[in-house]
Image 1: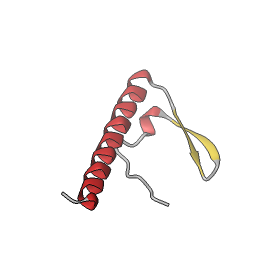
Image 2: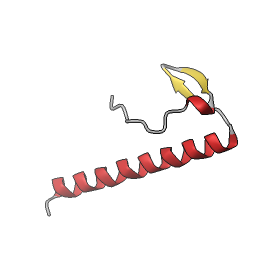
Image 3: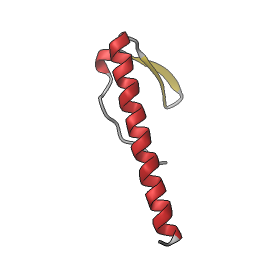
Image 4: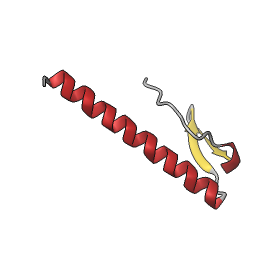
Length: 61
């Protein structure tokens, strides 16, 4: 296996891990009825637990 294939495999594992972490965080926030605090365009906002999306995709800049 070449270096490019190894890097792609590692990237896939990291992405899956991040997706799983997000899923668990959403589950926890909804269970505790706790808002999610995020930054959008440099502005800190609060998202109500019932409005949090169950999945999300990363945005690469």
